[in-house]
Length: 294
Image (cartoon, rainbow, N blue to C red):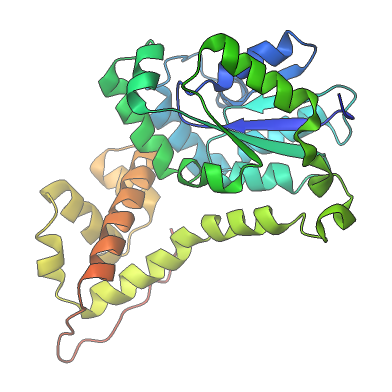
């Protein structure tokens, strides 16, 4: 094998991340599972993936979306004596934090059809779908294949899958120089993917501003008419009453994480509407600006 490096494996639930990590652990790798680190930091004993969603949302809102990655890097240190496989990261902020370290890193993305993942998962299809919905809303999974150095569509037999993982891992995947300090190998582009991810991290802030300006000048009632009452209330509190996410959570009796996830989904829905429909201005109304980013 090449010199020790950190192999970051990302993908949706039941795509084979843990299987790959445990398999490499049996080959002498150190396997770090991010969900275990999260449970340690959040001081929770909950191991149910679905029940963890709200806890994770609360934790991210409170400690930052890269808190788990920061803790993992602190545990690993700045040099590797043995190869490390890291599974279970969920957000772009976590991946940016890892890529900004001085460690040599490779990224492997896993994927599989929902029907195949549902057969593998001990969860019900409904629970797995719920996990997908929330975890995709955090922003990393929709971009996983685009930021990965290699992709495995894990619709293979377990034996074939493990063989593919071992082959890629043991050869070093021929990409770790990009992030191991040897920029000359790729023309100095080792920051290309972190910068692309940081643009993804910043998308929410820019979209907030776009929605605020549009709702201040467009036919707000027509836009809200396409949503159910709970979503309309959430948008009124956020963009009309200008409350922070924490204040909304207190008023509605929800967790901060639940509010954050629901607002993200609504921003994406409104973005689609704004891209498809012309904005109609009200006479005498000017765009408003928010004093707090919440």
